[in-house]
Image 1 (cartoon, rainbow, N blue to C red):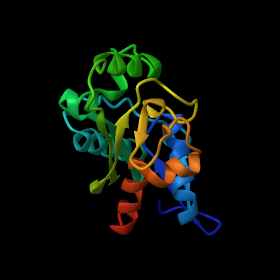
Image 2: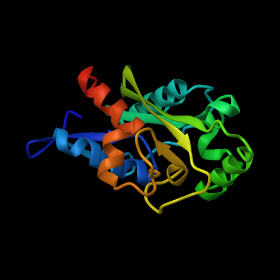
Image 3: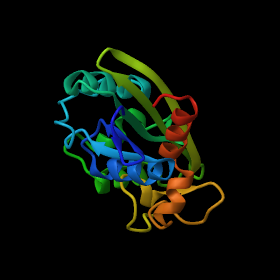
Image 4: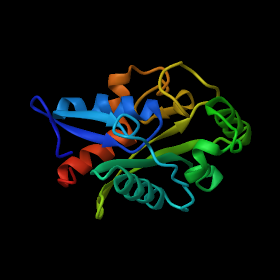
Length: 200
């Protein structure tokens, strides 16, 4: 983040998820930031996400990646919390159907567990953590509320997006245009909070 690219500032995203990197780029680009993945900046270390909170996992990824790369980085941990399931899948969102699970199986498991349940309220949560090689700089959180659809719809986004309908809309994140999702999403809210708090 101490680098520059033209008139933009470069941010290193501590993730190996290409979908997240693209969302970082689309959300932060208008603010004058250029986003590099950790792989592009020298390699993403193998961080074990074993904390029981989004905050714990985001902090761990940021601190360990900053130390490995010798540079300031931004990490996020995010997931879906469903009220009727006592907050599941939560921090296990990406591996809800097992360690070998994928987006389709995770969403299928969620929809199966919600069969016959009328209360489908849910929220996406994202915690952003910024760290330097010397340690944590700070964190910021964002969320978006909505409900779980009866069936997947749309091919956009990733993860649970085809199954999540944000409040005020009738379409899932998988159906809504990326620019709409990136205005509403938990990740957008968290990144905007991080900017407002001068974390990078």
